[in-house]
Amino acid sequence: MSTESAILSPSIGWILLAIFGILWVYLGYFWGKKAKSLDGFMLAGRNVGLALGTATAVATWITSNTTMLAPQFAFQMGVWGMVAYSTASLGLFLFAPLAKRIRLLMPNGFTSGDFIRLRYGKPSWYLFLVISVFYSLTWLISMGMAGGALLEALSGIPYEYGMTVILIVCVGYTLFGGLYAVIGTDFIQTIIILAGIVVVAVAILMHADISDIYANVSERRPALLDMLFPAAIMAIFNNLLFGLGEIFHSNVWWSRAFAMREGIGKKAYTLAGIIWLPIPIAAGFIALSSGMFDINVVRPDMVGPMVAAHALGKYGAILIFIVVFCSLASSIDSLLAATSDLITEDFYKKIFNPRASEAQLRKVSAIIILTLGILTWVACVPRVGTLATVLFFAGPLVGSAIWPILAGLYWKKANGATAAIAMLIGSLSGLWAYFQLGWYTASLIGTIVSMIIVFAGTLLSRTSFQWSELNEKH
Amino acid sequence: MESYKLEMATTPGFSDFQILYQGPDMGHFISGLKNGDYYFRLCGEIKTASESERLCSATKEIKVKHHNLHTAFGFFFTGAIAFGAILFVIIKGADKKEEIA
Image 1 (cartoon, rainbow over the protein chains, first blue to last red):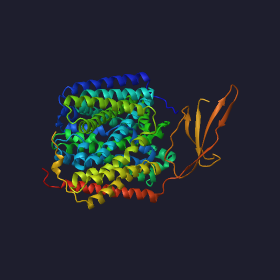
Image 2 (cartoon, one colour):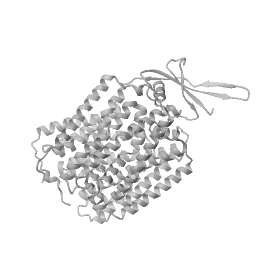
Image 3 (spheres, helix red, strand yellow):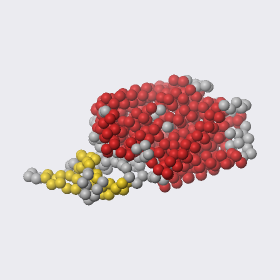
Image 4 (cartoon, rainbow over the protein chains, first blue to last red):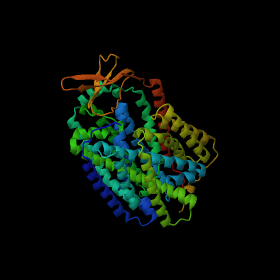
């Protein structure tokens, strides 16, 4: 077992956890009172405006992965690693026009699963649901692990306790408030996260000279400055495509497209991409300065928070604690809500109980949120792998979904059999690459294989889909 | 021993060693090494009232071998093609004026 010295005492850690935990749960309860119908609970009344829409997209995409995995990328893959991570903003930019089209094609839609079912039929839909739920779980697990590891590193709170409390808080307020609570807390969390990151970046620049950082990295980790670092070159488009796959397929982003007022989605996602773009660069820069502060990095996914906390002292550690707690909460709640919507709508209502009342659906939704929380907790306890290896395990699966979604939204000739085969073969070949070549190649392989199958299948297809079939009445 | 030094060198005799970490922690993450052979050992001092003795662990040899650049650029350009195709479909799709209802 490795150790690192905590900067804060466990009692300060518990106090911070208690303050923010109670605040989020109270806000969840407060906003939850607005959710009078299922539409309100699941899609915030389909009336979310530009400010809230942008904030929820930014907060959801700034996850523990941004504040902890982006520094890990820089620490392992150097300058190209920072660039590779920032390409995830392209997911937001490119989803902007998709959000507009989704709202146009499916004004009454609820989930991304709805789209696959109506567009491609049941075999593709079942496969898509497996991919989507699996991805959601890996994301949830990576965030639960991040929360526990962060609290342990910063305050000495044992990993299992910190991880458990974070999951309880997020499950609690998502349970009370649905998407209203998620979007409301996201707005506050965005402001805290952005202000925190700016303060940390400026403070680090004041504590360390860039030329000294460069000299230190050149001496101790020279490959990180190498523009021809092979693994980093391989990772650039892999990460870009992983980000696209995550956003294009996940109900987290589709539910927001449905929740935003007409005409808002495209602007909100574009603005969110602009705001998000520089954050991984700032986070990565922080990691590269670790040598300057003589910090012993034991786990690469902890390098960002550890450097910031050491550079800024006790108050810096408190700030990092709050920023990462907000980034975790804003993503865990979104994922819990969106995955619960997907399972409630697509599994329970569509497969098991088509005549379920709104009250029944809300009850089922709550049970699913609770179950997801418990499953995540069980998977987080053993603490297997780093954030990167856990999260990127889902890379080939989400990468394989990019082309079936794109083709389904824009090409009338795209068909269900091709979509199912593309997702299946794409996922399997990407998983092969994960184990044989490295996690930084898996999404790319999954996407490419799926793309070739979709191209071939569409070219040979005689289908001509009617877009009006997507406008399902509930 | 309450404190260790993690030493790294590029020669088995440690003539050019550098100390990567010094302290009580039982782990250290290394990244950013170029291709080559690297040698590691842990050293520490045992102190008695009158003298101290420096002890080192057995040497561990690690070979760093990055992927070759041809493979790396193969992945890079394949990824660029996939991304270009996605971009093309979305940009072209944004211009679609077809009847939806």
